[in-house]
Image (cartoon, rainbow, N blue to C red):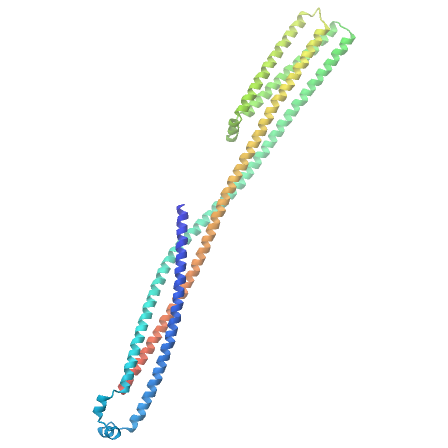
Length: 422
């Protein structure tokens, strides 16, 4: 704000100086016109006086050639005595000389007035030169600030470009990671389908065995099938635990952005942990039920019934369906979490880009202001040229005044010679 106030005051001072220079220029032009008119008038008067002086001198010389400067001549010609004539009537030449002397005095006064005005103009010009020097220093400082602003703008442009490159690489790495996770989930789906297919095969085989006969070999086969289904369920449990560990690892924030994401999604993580605990409890209950069924099978090995085997297989099928449902439930929040993280990262990227754009726009505004300052500096340079032209005009006026002084001196010499001749 202090710099802005300084710039505003500088602009105001420049405007005031510009107006003053324009007013001085107008005054100087008017003074120049008036001086030229006075010069013409004086020259006209001087020419008229010279002509009149020459005419009177010629007439005087013509009359003085045929007249004798004696009392008899004055008495005979005018009927007067020479002394009485000189005492009664003034000499016209002396009157002309006095008039010329008064004119010369007036011309000297005018010349002195013009010299005073020229001195005032020279003082104002020197003062304006001093202020222009100060303005020139300010302009140099503003030019340095402009160079610094351009350098900072280039640095910010480079920062924006680097940020875009980093964001691009991060987004590509995140897309690759999400693609890998999708492939893992697809593999898990295929494994679940294979387990379901195996269960269907076991169910059909059990139905076929029910139709053929009930014997010890059938009981052994059912036990083997039950054991394989049990092992498959154990594998499913391990996969569920593995998915649980992966979700916990992914839900743990690793960087500053992920920590902020983790803080925002803490409720979602707690909900997932609760669901995982419930799934583990269900798995433990199913394991207990399978253990009880196995114990019953072992106790009733002699009195094996087909209905017990069917019940056991149906229980395993239900357990498999429950496990599949739990896996899907675990996948859904994991997918939502990844989507939320991606959205959050996108929002952060957009926010950073907007900040960088704002910074570049501020620098553009500063550069526009500095360009305006440069334009003002150019106007000041033009004013300086105008003042230099005024200095040349002042020198010309001084030269003309000197010529007038020389003309006046010549006229004084002519008058002195005329006086001497008289």
